[in-house]
Length: 105
Image (cartoon, rainbow, N blue to C red):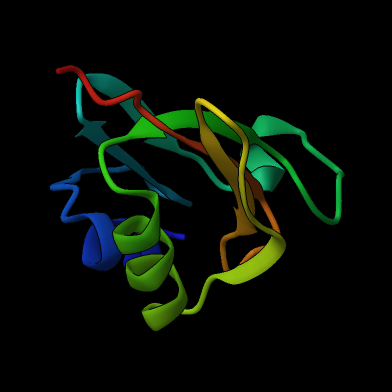
């Protein structure tokens, strides 16, 4: 996950080292993001340990970048009258629901 989010979305993570594990803390466009090993978080889920729902300026560009770095499409972009939405998964199987911000005139 560290590689996907840092390379695809240019998130700069601070690595916090502990004797048996590392945490990765970063800022994703104003949202604090902490990547923690599932074992430490006591999360036994095999997929979708987290789900993001984010708004972006250009959904096509976001999908292209995510796919280039190992993401996969869960739901193709649908264009409703006033919005565009779709969903992806990161390489670990966590889902990202994406909406394009409405354009202002």
